[in-house]
Image 1 (tube, rainbow, N blue to C red):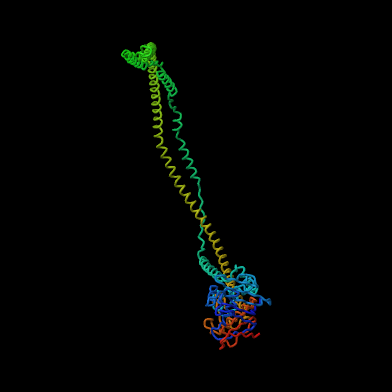
Image 2 (cartoon, helix red, strand yellow):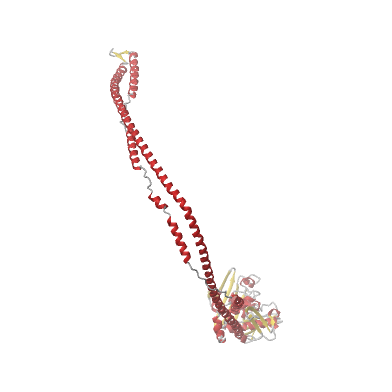
Length: 592
């Protein structure tokens, strides 16, 4: 891509209050005294395309506005993009910011996507001071992004047979492989020392001959012991002794009879209950009292005779009350007579019940006497049965004790024989255990020697494997060192054609052959912070030239203070040089 600015104009921008415009060429000089606005041309190009100042600061937009606070700040940039005419207008009015590309409103991201891609790359070309002033990590990242990464497979192929050595040892990340390989090497060397030290521990133990044991005498003594133990017939004699059986069935039958008789006592003929006549007698007394009260009221009630003024008839005012009382007295009398009859009937029935209850009580008493006689007979029979069982039990215990006493005497003799045989058997069994233990130790020694032989063989194999692995790792480490050396060489070859006195170091090889991250810019053998102003410009121009050719992005270069350099290197892109002169107005000279 090639971008060439052909015309630029601005209003309200930095020192330009009014509209100021310049026509630019492929090689252009901007001349004039200090403070006239020569550097503003570079700021205009940067702001129009990126929205930043020439140092990449987006927040510096307010600083680009003229001090008189104009209503409109605008930059119009006419340029050729790969030979095609283009126009970009960026304007700031109040708080609004607008960008137009060929009369179409766009965003800075649109311009970045279609033109400068990476803002840092664009500004590093436009402003030779930009890249050297980046933080080392940002500068390194920028170059890493634009440089073609060294092809891993190409480097491996240059190693010849060492390529397979690296791959066999898990070579993936060159940055960490050497460190990991040295750690593995140290582990294997330490392990080899340990394995060599173990060799002296594999000493077999002495193995004797096994002993034999004759168990003929032991079997004979055990047989005699079993015979003596089985000679006692105590258990058989005790089994022959019949144990007396308790008369349980008879006692259960008598208990059943006894329970039945006692139950029959409880089931005697029940007495009949007397009818309750007290309530009716109480009611009779209440009626009598009520009758007497109302009779007295009737007797005491005096007639009240009045004479009718119209007809002259006499009228008794108490007549109706007297008639009502008489009617009530008749009702009470009738109810009382009925109640008296009921009471008499109940008393007659109660007399009959009392007579029946006397007969029932007499019958129940006779029945209970009969049952008590039967219960006494049952109690006598139970006592006879229990006494009989107790006698049989005592006879059994006496016979049993006789047998036990007889065998107790014989047991003493048997125990003496048993203890003697056990002592003999125990002594012979001790000899047997000793032989078995000795032979077991022989077997254990044989197995131990077998394990020692296996461990010794495995230790020899492990030593051989460790030595092989150590040699393999040493070879892999040497191969990795060569890989790193080739990688650095390829990085240098990629950028070297575009640099003259500038050297850029991304990584360095340590004394151990490892690649360590590093970033350093050197110009003519001197570090960048020690360069003069002219040397810094020249270094920046070489880096701009590197970026132009690596990325094929031919952007304009704006060289400020170019008078500090006797000869400004000519690069294959548009170059605009600002130079301090005694002119009191800015002059633009198009050289070509």
